[in-house]
Length: 98
Image (cartoon, rainbow, N blue to C red; front, side):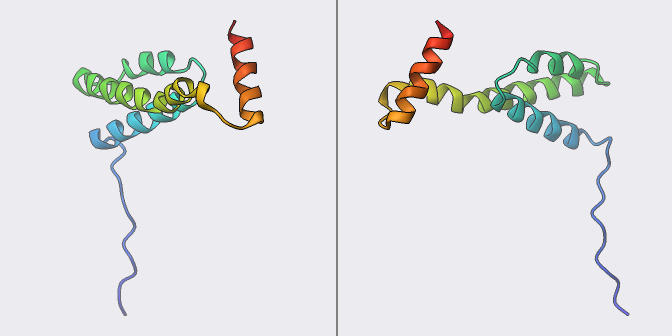
């Protein structure tokens, strides 16, 4: 009989997995408008070895900035909305911020 498919195995202590996880987490936290990024950055600082911690922090920060780009784009283009509902939402957001 033929052998079945081999399961995909990942070493959970892999630096590549740590960097990928930091990037994914940074991007997701960037999309969510709450202040969780600072706490996660501090937690990344506890990673051993320190060189991996620094690399994870760099990847986390870059991904976090990429996650914030949609919010920046929305803010930069808020004056160009066309629909009445969108205009009301922009007006309400400005009211909340003032």
